[in-house]
Length: 173
Image 1 (cartoon, rainbow, N blue to C red):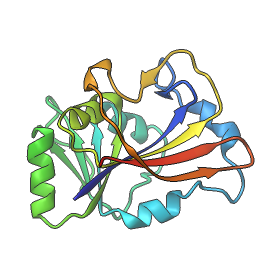
Image 2 (cartoon, helix red, strand yellow; image 1 turned 135 degrees about the vertical axis):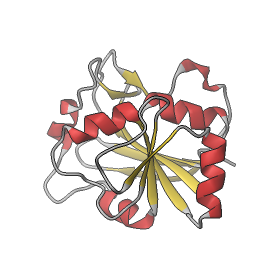
Image 3 (cartoon, helix red, strand yellow; image 1 turned 180 degrees about the horizontal axis):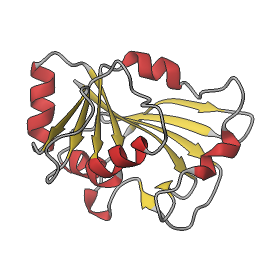
């Protein structure tokens, strides 16, 4: 099973601003350009996200992940109002093993920082598709916590866009 960390980040490596804001992405939403999102979304069969990310997505209005099962990592919350969201306190390894045994092939790690870090610590993330937005935030939620360790990745693909956005796809060897 592949667990793909697919995220937009600032040029200085932040997923969101200090208070979780993502409004800095708006100037880069070009008409007719989704940076490969529709193709990526159609290729996955589920999503994993942390509770804070889940709560933030709920504030955006319509649920953007209709038709796909979601596993929300939480040590405190036990339920959610959404039928397509399963709350779990499993370890990353146990969840990955269960999803693989259930036949899932490609799962999107939505984030945020704590969830992605937990999966990275166990070397469960297989792909990193990062859309780098040409903006410095200076402060905010990082891609990972500092405690993930180190390792080398291989380049799978790079795409550039006229507005300065760059998308890189790295794989764990």
